[in-house]
Length: 260
Ligand code: OOG
Ligand code: MG
Image 1 (cartoon, rainbow, N blue to C red):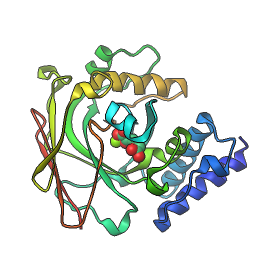
Image 2 (cartoon, helix red, strand yellow):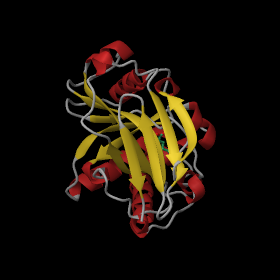
Image 3 (tube, protein in one colour):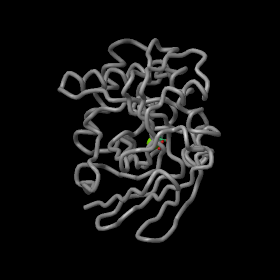
Image 4 (tube, rainbow, N blue to C red):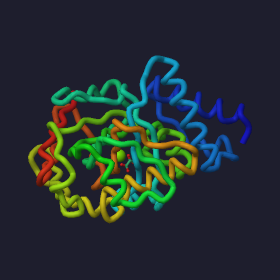
C-alpha cells in the first residue's frame, strides 16, 4: 500500500475518533490494507499523538483470550501502543460523551522493571523482567460501527484503545501464580463472567513474551518502565451512565468503573 494510502486511512480513523462518528471498515475502502500496512497506520496515528504532545507509556495486547477471539471472530493476537492520554485515574468516572461505544474488560497488567527485546523471549524470561503486576480495566471504544472489523482494521485502529485504569499499588510477580489468578466480573453487583489468568495465552507472561517477540519483528522493544496490558480476560461489557462495572481479582485487588 502507498504512503498516501496509509496517511489517508490514518486520517480517516483520527477523524472518526475526534468526531465520535463510527465508520465502516477501512479495509473495504483501502483494499490493499494488509496487516503490515495496518501496523503502519497504527504507527502513523501514534506519531500524530506524539506530535500533539502525548507520550508513549507502554504496549497492549489484544485478542489474546478465546473469549475475545470468539466475540470478534478473529483468532490472531495483535499489539497496540499505550499513550499517557489513555490513563483513567482511579475512581474517575468514564465520560461517556467523549466516547462512541465504550466497553470494559478486565485485564492483568504488568509494569516492567527491565526492557524486553525479542526474538526468543520466553514466558520465564518475560516474567523475570516484570516489576509489578496489577489488576485493571481497559475501556475499549472501536471507531468501527458495531465493532465490525477485520484484523487489519482493528490493528490500524490501535486495537480500539481508549482508556485504562489499574488497581492499587501492585504485587511483585514472585509470589503469584498468574495462570490461577482469578477475576470475577460484575455489572451493577451481578456477576456476569469469571476467568483466570490462563485465559490469556495460557499465562499472562506468555502474552508478554508474545508482545516482545512480535515487536522485535518490527524492530521495536518493550522499554523498562513500560505498562503492558495483556488482553481482556473475558468478553467486554458495555458501559452505561450510572452503572458500575467491577473486577475483583484473587490477589490483585478490585477495580470499580463508573460511567456518566
Ligand atoms: C479489540 C481490542 C482488543 C483485548 O484486550 O483483547 C483488546 C476490540 O475488542 O475491539 O483490547
Ligand atoms: Mg484490551
